[in-house]
Length: 484
Image 1 (cartoon, helix red, strand yellow):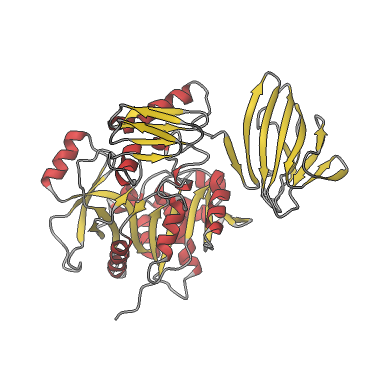
Image 2 (image 1 turned 180 degrees about the vertical axis):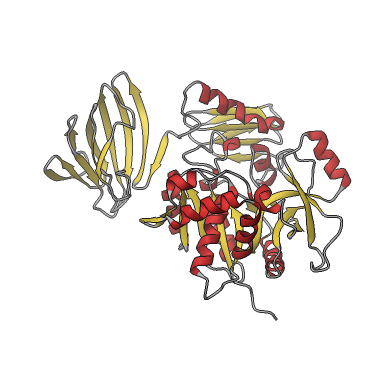
């Protein structure tokens, strides 16, 4: 039996997941949510799935700067130690993101494994049949060693308009084993009639967004077909800097890089693109109706999460995050409740959630950006009340973590400890506060909050002043490198 090929998983975690609003939001998108089961997020499922492959090496992750601490925290929670986490200063689509990982692999494995095979996986997909996934990856790795760039095409089960498509070539190269085909072209998400035609003609597969090739071959093809992207990413990668547990490419250079997907930058242009048709029980969980399709359902076809009363309702996705919800006499609907938003729609309109996002953006709202609970590397906070010249927050600080040494120009703050122990600096004075104790931070006073204990610290913060925006903060020192 041949020795397993070393596989280097490259996890792309830059998606926004806007079609799963109001649960998925810009600051906490779907890859960080537990949508299938309650134990792990989609990102964690992806990491664990990759780690179980034969020959799997430590993963590389690429994410945006706002999500870097979420990525690090979720890796740590499942005992996954990444080989590297690259932080994009600006989203430039998949081709530049994959190039960062490829440059990393070719540099660090030049002597030990110059033909390093990289398995590119989106962080937010579901794969039910992990055995079939492992078999497909093993087959793809053998093909990639022959210089092919392999993608995985999902055998379509319906005329889906929410996915891009891959058209397999009519002629299969003699170099390719049975079950592996050449790629003719990639197609964007079609309208309904075009999707039906694809299904009727055959030879079309859903574009899974998963790829496998050697890092060196990918860079060769990128340099050949998109030298502008290759040059920009290479320069940005050479100017990289370490930032705690993260690696930052040069921000100005990377942000100037043209944005393009791997599909069009490389896979559409190369003569060495191959596709492996697979089933896998795959979903990109791109909309509420697709989540309903893969979710566990009761005898009436309903997927129910949270405190929900259901009566005379069928084939629906029903979710409550914060309160009691009653759904009576409705069929084929999606009802999703959060603290600050409620979505009700027919499941056939799942692709139209963007209308709500557009409304929020055009009216200067923030419900598409943040939840009421906002996660930070030290813990979280949530606004529980606000009005003219005041705001009330709940704050949780994780054990041994601390906020930045900071100052506000327009607001004063009162802190009341609910549970745990707080180490507080106000000006030059440092104190320990326990449950039911409090302190006051005047406007313009330098201060810091820390949890020196082994249990989470919970407190209530009351702000008062002329301006209470989150941008009224000057940081003088920060554990997480945010002073800049």
